[in-house]
Image (tube, rainbow, N blue to C red; front, side, top):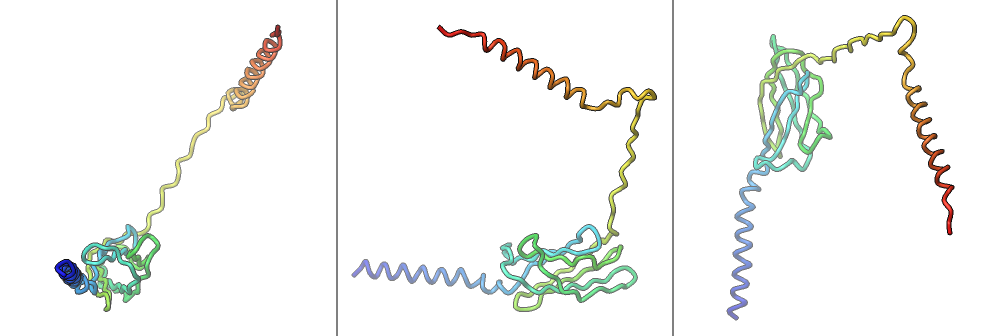
Length: 174
């Protein structure tokens, strides 16, 4: 009977510890940690996680509002999740060049709020390639290309194979 009481007591202690450990996580599960940053152009990216650092395992509704230079306003804009990863959201090109104060909210049941200053820049295009100068001699020499070298290489290989075949057949067996 003593072993049964010990086993029952161990099970009850394990259940109690599990409930105590799960209670703070459940109490914090209704909050989000939002990290807001610029995307390098005229958009905003948001990484949403749980406060303990776990990845977001479901889609949440995020709403962006922004105030820019000269009092310009953008939003509210509802953000959509992006395929780059769990909890990653992007606004796309919604800002104009300048410094913006961006605020992102997430309503209940998973509430969260973040504010950041974002420097939006106009999209940059790569510089045009520089022209390459092609030099040719006046008499046309030097422009033969690669084919004479390939032909010479094939000739050397054919000659080596012919010599090997000639000397390979002269062996006699006794």
